[in-house]
Amino acid sequence: AANFEQAKALIDRGVEADGSRPTGTAYLLSTSDTARNVRSTSYPLVRKLLKGRLQVSELKQDALRDAGDVFLYFIGARRVEGLDSLRFVPGAIADHLTSFGGALTSDSQMSALRWLEAGATGSYGTVAEPCNFPQKFPDPVLVSHYYLRGETLIEAYWKSVLMPGQGIFIGEPLAAPFSRQQAAR
Image (cartoon, rainbow, N blue to C red):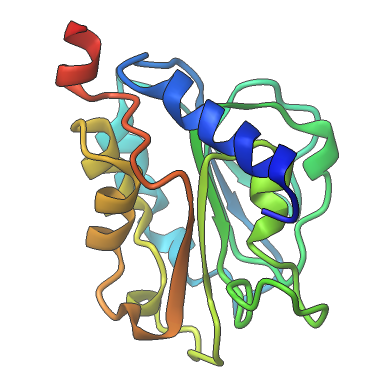
């Protein structure tokens, strides 16, 4: 986070999410950026996995705007427009497949910090040019599966990236919206 207030808000979102079993929508955007849109081939599997558990909105557009129920947001884009018009559900995760999203202070591409500033609880970005190999980025099917199974944000994200050496996970790592233990408290 850029300052104490943002860090506290992030932690508060993670704590609020714990065991809350939130409703919301998984937004899966297929963009016109073919080099960064490589994960979109997995979107039908995400839809199947989440059926009956979360709403899924699979869109062919370059940005999402004016959504008030964002729980998952996956996109391939150098920069993501419209973040200021979105409302993220506590525990939400969002990321954009691009080369330097994890270079948190870089201006060449959108920093993954922008997701947290917009209200997401966790994100991921690469810190060095990884090429667009899907294995180097979060797999939407796996991260959704593990997160909705009750694992923490960091566990779900970590298990979804097969080659994590060029990336960084950011956010409130212990957020667990679907944790059975948290729900029992």
